[in-house]
Image (cartoon, rainbow, N blue to C red; front, side):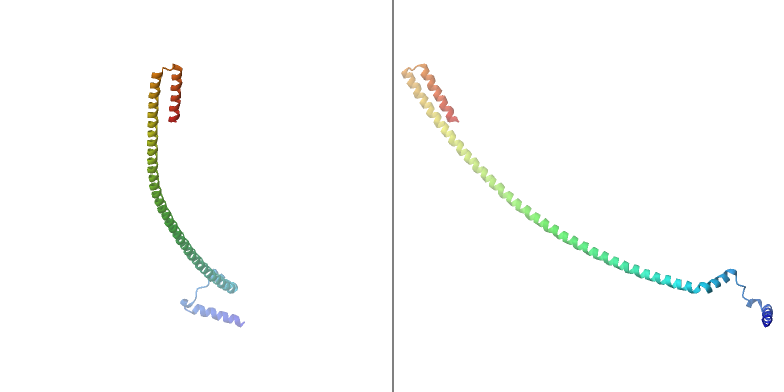
Length: 182
């Protein structure tokens, strides 16, 4: 029974002690929290530690991935810039080649125009010469025919040939004139 006496003494001392030193009685929620802490405290602390380490590992992995992604983007940007500069150089070379080709074509065209103009002048001179020769030949033949016609006409006047012979002679002359004109 000594426990009973102790309990009674404690209760008396509690009642005689000033009220300010008495802690308030714990609420059922506080008791439940203390009980939880006793039963699950170690497991909870282990889970919190595990979650914290997973969180840190995840942050580390995300940081690594972000760095890798940033490096890849930088490499891709450099590659794109290199390809653009190569493409720009190729375009400049093609432009220069095109300009050179255009200049060569312009020179060739100017030379062709000069040659063509010269050829046309030569053809014009040649045609003029031929037409002059043809006109002279035609005039010469015409004069020969006129003189021959006059001779025949005089001969006919003097020799009273019949009309049929005269018609044949004129037909022959007309045929000869047609042949000469062709």
